[in-house]
Length: 550
Image (cartoon, rainbow, N blue to C red; front, side, top):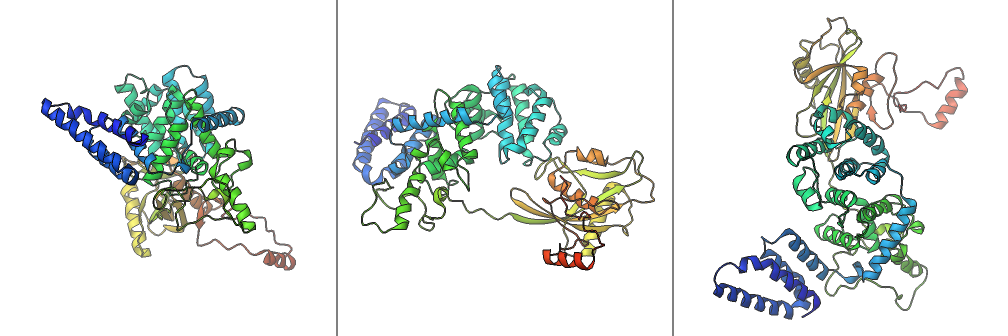
């Protein structure tokens, strides 16, 4: 019996023991005999079909403890993976840990959440600080998060402070950060900790993931390792990229097999003495050195252990000259069939990409395209200054609970579009003149899974008695109040188009994909020279609709 099968068998016996121990002695004896038979069978077939036999073991133990089930899953995975994609021994693992942590101690960025975690002695406040930062950093760049994190922690420094805040306040501070459900779930979690867990954060990755809404495996591992020192791993996009390159994993990292392998590698590597620092170091390496497109391999602390780097060095002489023999460099050699972790046959090694061959980008499903008509309704002469109408979105779905301009689904017919939009406006503001409804242009905004095109309209209530009240779910705000309200980036883009069309204003944004009936294509350089020659008296420095408004 091989060591691998022996370990599988021991785990399998443990997992089945609670069920086999129930009943008479005859049932125990039968179970024992059945186990011996299965062990003998798996031993004789180990070389040919270990993964399949292991899969059968897992399926027969649905009630096994989660920890043991995960161990068995990892052992099964190791059985199906070429050693080329693994770490050979503890010496290699130790070298990786030491090199990475030494580099991190010298090169780590000074970030507010790191200072907070290092300086805070109260474990619950430390965990809360880590939690906020990890949620904000999901799908968002560090430079963007810093200001939001600082303002958040100043406003709500403890779990209790956040739990007592209103959702409106949370949405208002989160506005512009994107993925707005994150802020809502963060507050839901804080309330659960305060109201049901006695104000104390769960102390392990398992209980964090189990008890807190919106906390997945990655966030739970980050909190547990950084705040509580649990030796548990994390795998985000940065860590996945580092591991794929270090072990030459070219298959789709989002697939179940590759994802399991990455988590297994990360758990093997995490330093039990400094788990939080190690996990942050791995993420830091991916964010600053092992970047997606232009990695700085010469600055990488683990380059000597990187199989992608070795592959680049191997391919260089092969590309320049024909070699009679194979170079003495380790390669993947699966015992049977195609390795499920190597580059797929349909996407072989590309010499021009170098280490960027790993990992290959997964094919992304194209964003769903939707269109909407929206109108900025303004009272220019309202008491106390001009006011604009905002309405609140439903409490579930896209941009839940945020404020926007009245909107309707896009209609292909312009008359039908205007009629539907006017009816929506009147639902919130009463009778309105349709003759002043103007089409101003369009704005395209891409959410995580939706590409939404807004047809932007404007309507100014000139010469009418100002409306001072609004029905539930609507508000009349001044322009100053609008800029601090809980509105999305897309709504701010829409308002910039409206502002750019008003008399005396000409504002826009390079980042907004905006077009309008009055916009003109910028002349070529040659045309500008001719214009300057023939019309030297005309000034060309007037701002355009699409000039940057930072």
